[in-house]
Image (cartoon, rainbow, N blue to C red):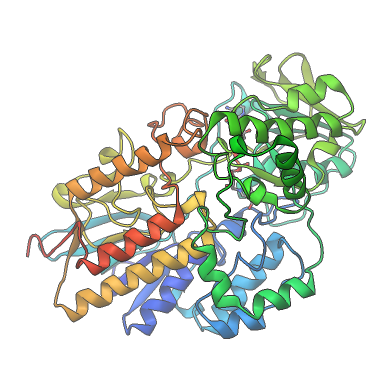
Length: 534
Ligand code: N01
């Protein structure tokens, strides 16, 4: 038997070496289990390895977007800025991998092709691009935003210039000096990269289908007083953040815009605009729930855009007309200001869709000659990384088929028919509607505790029931339907990709979710069954 054909056995196989995967590896090792991570990329970092476009930066403050499992780690690490740039985050995750000696547990440049549950052995059989594995548990730490969305524009294959995608950016630094550059898309990735590309490019054409709300980051060097304060009460600070609806350190007051004097609301929103970034809604509980309140906050931002952008026609095109928060809020550094530059042009794809791409042009309202085309077109979000792998469970049922009408999961952790398979921040969990870092740690801790509980209680196989899963997704949608967010087209509900099933996937409300996770454990993992077939 050749080396490649030998089946390697582990207690647990983890897919993906981002923040979730490496922490999961550490936890399993501490439990005394053998585990391996298979990682498609050639280094750790997940999203922070692939998304290295200019300006890539986290929109959650650094002091929150970091691990909390080790007090020494969180005390010793010093972030240089309020919001960390991608290189510093990558440095941090590498530091963590070294500090806890995790590298020898990661197989790089090894893509998982298929994972099949063998009912007679109750084990997963995994085939990668390099070999075969067998494991009791399989944990997908594949991230919510991993599979690039590549719209099929007519003639794209004929384009002979430089073609880039923000979410799989080349490792080498790109120089746009003297170039005519086109960017398609105006989500967070575009909003972060456009101001920097505009500084270099001779001409920059921004092709916008839907404008976005964006709040200034007011980024800057780490405020040492703030850092000292938070570090002096770090564990309390982290606990408090789990009590915020989005798991962040924003004001969680229960005041209502609809019951507050509008002048007072504007003072608060101005303060939030100047300092809060993603926490812009902070102070008001009804922005997400009440269309009238939402309109007040939305109009505040619309007016800011009109104040910043000098050309009224361009400003009007940049003003969103849907509920603020319906698409994920963006946080920027000089995005709207960029449209005041003479070399930057905004093209409205709603009015003039892209008709055709040729060797060196994009045809919309007119023909644009370009040297570089940048696709900032987002992701097959939340489910893409899972449905792109050939995963089959009981009775050979394929996950892709099971989710054809819309993804369903219990807690965003377990999936009916897929025993001993766990997803970290899967569909039906707060995931992308929360600070990902505490949500990742919450799931990894929960999964590890569950495996430990199974070991102590002589259980081999865990599986969520169909009833629990169905009820859970009803709850996810009932909560989402209480908000004003669900009527907006967004990647939260699959509407960014035509052929994708449309259903709202994130669980809104970190505190309720956290309580329910604990409750389920205290009731001996209510909604899961153990050793069904054994
Ligand atoms: O992707 P997006 P992203 N024709 O889906 C447009 C996280 N993130 O990579 O809105 C024309 O938001 C699409 O238009 P529309 C964050 O959670 C975080 O920017 O569908 N246009 C949209 O404008 C974020 O929300 C950070 O009409 C097409 C754009 O492409 C998420 O990642 C930084 C099109 C895609 O925007 C995704 O952000 C970056 C088509 N056929 C990202 N298809 C930070 O932490 C798509 N578009 C800061």
